[in-house]
Amino acid sequence: MEKETNLLDVCIAIWRGIVRFFKWIGNIIATMFRITFQRWYIILPLMIVFVVALYYWKRPSNRKYEVEGIVLLNGPTYEHFQERYKGLMRASGLTEESNLGMMLHCPTIEPKYMQKISMYPVIDVGMDGYPDFVDKNGAFSASDTTAVRMEDRACIHFKLKNKLDAFVCIEEGLLDYFNSDPVMQLEYQTYVANLERQVRFNHDQIEKLDSLTSVFYFQQNPAAQIVPTGAKSGQEIMIGNRKISLFLDDIDEHMQKTVQDDIRLARATAPVVFENHLTAWVGIYYHPLVRLVVNCFFGWILALVFGSLIVYRKEIIAFLRGGKLP
Image (cartoon, rainbow, N blue to C red; front, side):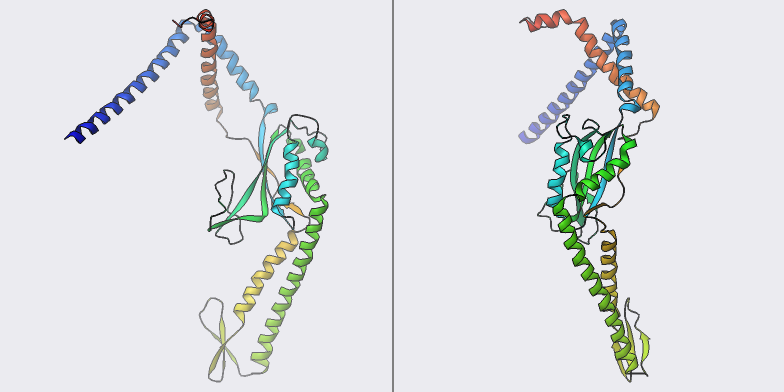
C-alpha cells in the first residue's frame, strides 16, 4: 500500500510540475502580448526594422550555397589526400595570408567567399565495393564489422557566398590543386601501371578460358552436345554418356572483374577526379508566405527584447548598480 501511495504521489508531483510549466509559458506569452499592446508605438517600428533587416540579410546577393562533391582517388591514399585538403581548410579563414584565389587559380575567390571547408569519409555498408552514404555526423566506427571506410573516395564540402559564376573555376582549381602534388602524381603512375597489368591479365585469362573450352570440349570431341542445366550461369555438354560442365562460371567471374577494372582504368585520368560535378543548393526552401510569417515572428521577438530594454532601462541600470528588480 505504501508503494502505491508513493507512486501516486510521484504521478501527482509530475502532473503539477507540467501544469506549472505550461502556466509559466502562458504567463510569458501573456506578458509579451501585454507589452506589445501597451508599447505598440515602440514595438511596431522595431518589428518593421528587424523584419526588413532579416529580408536584407537573406537577400540573393548575400546568399550562401552548400557545395558538395565526391572525389575518386586513383592511387593517392586517403590520408595523403586529407593532409593536402587541410591546406585549403587552413586558408578558408578571413585573413589574406593564404589566399584561396591564388591556390585555386580563381582570382575572384577570396577566403570570405569560400568558407567552412570540410571533408567527410564515404562508407561502404556490406563491403561490396559500392558507396552507401557520406558520414557527416561521425557515426561510423572503425570497429564496425558490417561497414568500412572507402579508401578510394572522399566527400568535400564547403559554403560558397554568392559566387556561382566562379563555380567551374573552383572545380577546375580544386583538381589542379590536388593533381599538381608530386607525391600524388607518383602514386598515380604506380596505380595506373599496376591496373593496366591487371587489365591485360584479365583479358588474357578470358581468351585462354574461351579457347580452352572450344579446343578441349568441341575440337577434341566433335560429337559433344550442349545440354542446358537450368542453373544461373552454367551449361553442360554430353560426351558419350558423361556430362561435363563448361568453364562458364570461371569466364563469367573474369568478365565481371575485367569490366570493373576497365571502368577503373577509364576513370583514372588523373590522381584525383570528381565522380560527378560539384553540386550546390541553398539550405531549406521556404514558401514566401512561410518566410514572411517566420521573419515577422523573429522580428517581433527581437522587437520585444529591444523594446523591453528601452522601456525598463532605468530599472535595468539600477539593478546593474546593485539594486533590485521591481
